[in-house]
Image 1 (cartoon, one colour):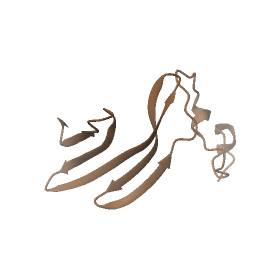
Image 2: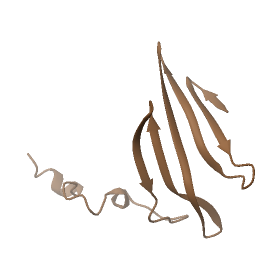
Image 3: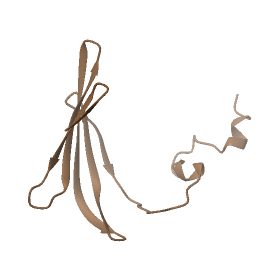
Image 4: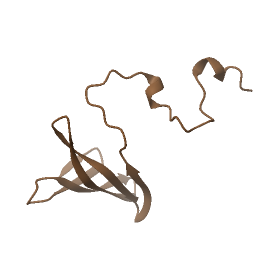
Length: 101
């Protein structure tokens, strides 16, 4: 369990594989508290490092995302352009943003 500045996170480790398979947490905001859960699955080794391929995320009991890690690169030299989705036709390079009114 980690607790810092109103955020608590409990890590659930599989005793057979020693993998973190779930994180259950809460965020305290004044009188309210929001709970979140992330489930990790489909573990594979990439360049000698064991990583999960799937994430299933919940916030306040609602499934908010199912993520699949499709490309994993360790120790990469990244630029800001590496974080622009290829499929998003509405995201434009910075030099073109000034043309949008």
